[in-house]
Image (cartoon, rainbow, N blue to C red):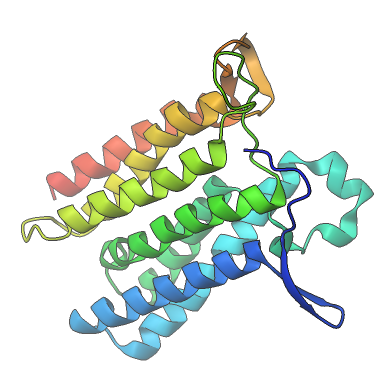
Length: 251
């Protein structure tokens, strides 16, 4: 979705600009913290441990997501190095954040001898809310643009809306599955990763104006493009996810 002359700034206080992206990200973080603190405490986990876990998780998600985004746009940031830390303007790669969050939180849980999968399950709602809200913020930043399509009334596919709906759908699925008492720890998290990988690869990346890698196909009439970097790595992520789900099932 592309809207001319739209502003990403909500208001300014002197030199400080409060942006839509920063606000949406902050709401997502607070939602995630509330959920982890509330339901983690109900599971008998220490509040100090939960707080430290969450801080480590958020910091590592931001670092991982920003590092991958900068690496993918290295030429731009080489010319504008002062923007590398400006995450309030957007530019977080989900898969980088996912990898950073998994590695650091797993390591912390291993040190504290805690069940990482229980905490990973608790992190799902905050991540899903983050996907839904941040994709809306992408509209104001005029990023994550869709491909132009000739067969539709809109000029471009509203891929930010597609991405936001993915977050909503995954949150609904999580809330439904979370009611089942028979699920083993970790199932909710890896099921979320599976759902996101499939939905993004099919319903967002296909219509997103990303550069194609390897062999490429573009249908300008329908605004379809294959294959993006995310789609190329999708099978690998799916194999890992199916392996983890099978391992949890037989544990």
